Image (cartoon, rainbow, N blue to C red; front, side, top):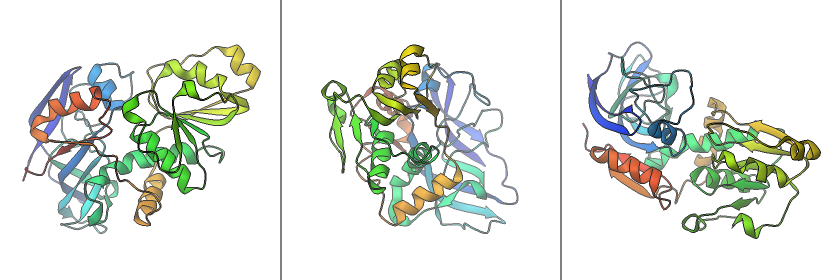
Length: 311
């Protein structure tokens, strides 16, 4: 069986290619993709060629770890069946083409354990489950301190703020671009220059901007924690200010199955809303245009590739 896939052949070089898929084995399912999201963090670094060395990384590569589709074949599967709508956090089924992420393709062959059945009504919003799980992991993997300040009001920052509100707190969110100030639900969005506070006990950065670290450390209370929840090329900071504040620095890694299960339950119980976060949709045939918009237009919070015409 073949699949149509987005392939990044080299930095700045993206093409649609037909790739051969392996026959599904026991416990594997075939998913026909309906929608896949474009990440403005890791995928931007891959696209630009600035991704630091990372196990399994390289070119050519199929990007994408935010896919929703229909199961069309289930080889001995027990938890999902043909016709089920599922979330797929990427795949590795493309032979010589790397699939460390591997979700941006019309058809995917994945272990049943990799997919999560989702409610029909969730539809395209299901692509946001990966970012919701990422936000939850950053909050839940620490010492229980709720975030008092979140830096960045993109999709990840908004999901993190919504999770904090669902947990009973109301963080401040910093955003510098006017196009991204609107959309707060139960929290405040301000420009950093309009916030004089310098005693935050917990700051979570989701901007991925390593140049902000010194400024953020200066805003901590003594013994406060700075959580790096974006993806960064390199991090450095002046030691004396951090020493004087006895600052703590924590790196939030990728989400785990428990995080995905938790946010899926929160969405199902309507404690976490995924509404209003998908702003752009593009047919898969125009993938190159979609990636350019996702990475270059600040009005674009989340770009979807629509695979609906592929059968």
